[in-house]
Image 1 (cartoon, one colour):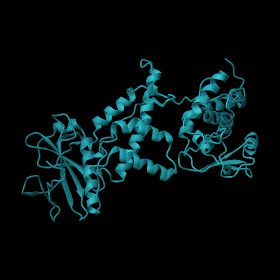
Image 2 (tube, rainbow, N blue to C red; image 1 turned 60 degrees about the vertical axis):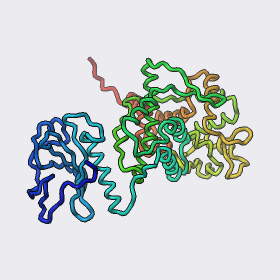
Image 3 (tube, helix red, strand yellow; image 1 turned 135 degrees about the horizontal axis):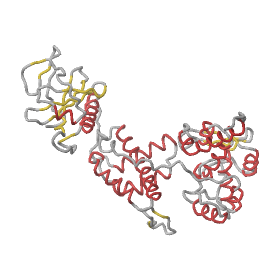
Image 4 (spheres, rainbow, N blue to C red; image 1 turned 135 degrees about the vertical axis):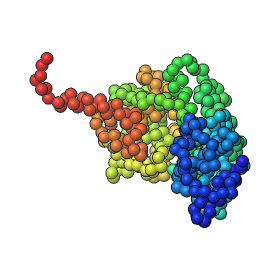
Length: 444
């Protein structure tokens, strides 16, 4: 049976010829079979009628039990001419395991029907869908272009994830030939891989880890989830742009659950001066101050120009956040004095934060200096992003509403802020309650 094979032709009076039958009979549901349930399908009796279940407007999934005892899936769509079109999908999985090729479970049948419907819609519109030679590498390139068009700049980490974890294994595969088992094997390999470590000669090296440690394993699974997110985003973008007819190969891939803990590292207020004084490289010390005063990301500070600081209103302008939106960050008196001094005598187009020789801060150049500073200050190790967390945590502790904090950080809503700092807000509420709720004079 081939996808697209017509089985039934609608008649002018609303009746339908049944599969292989010349006799016309009313096409109606004669059974209460729940076709999405394998158990219910096994109990059904052979019939010349298909039971159809509506999936979406104009598309339904049909199933019937043949005289031979084998079930068959069928797709039905409303064509552009107002008449039904039918297509055999394949056998159902009541008596044999689904393979997605000749035997389909309900979800696979639905995915195949959606792909067929999309293909037919494209043909009705006179467009061509699906490029047999379109590879994962091309999908990644198009996705990066999309990010640059939408946000004006692709995150360097996204590029790094693609080049390191996706292209070496999947890059040359056409999207049409991707299978769930192939992608699941890739995802498992990513989760089991040892973490890479940086080397001076930029050669590939790996860090030894204790895989029996639950915390370490959780971190590796969290990393694998982030890598999978990039792949799925690119593949879905390709599907939306008609580069492939079906996304059934990846739409049921599942991430590891409960591995993204809400605990983040940040500096306590008393540790911030100690950390800043421990920065041995003066230009890095100024960069860290900028992060503390604004909560900006490393990438935002690295490209920040003098014109971003508006001395008339005491704010710093971020034209494009990670979310693609601009934001204005108010400065306190200390932050205002810092930026005023730091931009003095510079042109509007000059960078505020640079190396001593005027070079721009590049990707990952902050890591070494953070390690040196935290070690010298004898405080818990944090990454540069921890300075952003420090900025946010201090605001939450002082009682700033989470929505305001989210706005300052450039988040579109409060979900991430609640996830990372919600417990600090709860502590503030508890402290305020203890300080304001009067004693009721009750004893015993």
